[in-house]
Image: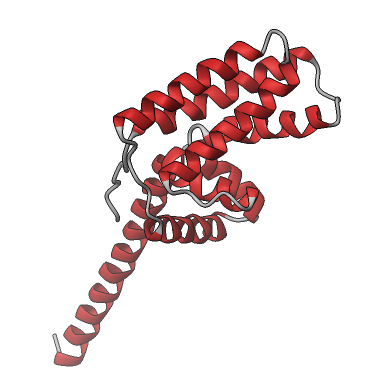
Amino acid sequence: MSVGTLLAIIIAIVVVVGLLAVAASYVVRRRRLRERFGPEYERTVEDAGSRREADRELSEREKRHDSLDIRPLQPDVRDRYARDWENVQGEFVDRPEGAVHDADLLVTSLMRERGYPTDNLAQKLADLSVEHGRTVEHYRVAHDVNERSLQHEATTEQLRGAMVHYRALFDELLSDGGRRRHARA
């Protein structure tokens, strides 16, 4: 075999191995994002229009989230929030719309206490999705019902459901207490 032929074979093998490594890296990255974001991954794919664009969006969310100062709660603060939730929940029988609105405010306050920016709903959802991808949809649904209740357009059953949805995220934010680190691929 001539040197040129041998060199062409070696170059072809290196190129194929390189392409396989890039493809494997892409698959691992996508799998990591899918596991980390849970149902939020498919929602982002649908909104973005492609998996590649969704992967980029979710990676950007991770970078932004890493720059935030997400703090664990001190035990006394955690206890105060738990008591506040019990009070809000207790209001539901007499004031369902008011209780849902108060639940929204309490969840927002808890997010702020933990270090999440709370000025913009879309950004809140994006920031929460990084560590709470499995419960951020609860917040979306509850917040939507809260908005409808402000116009007196939500049924009592929808309001009850909103309280359940708020509770799912509230419990996770309250009990999580700190950052769950995910390995980067």
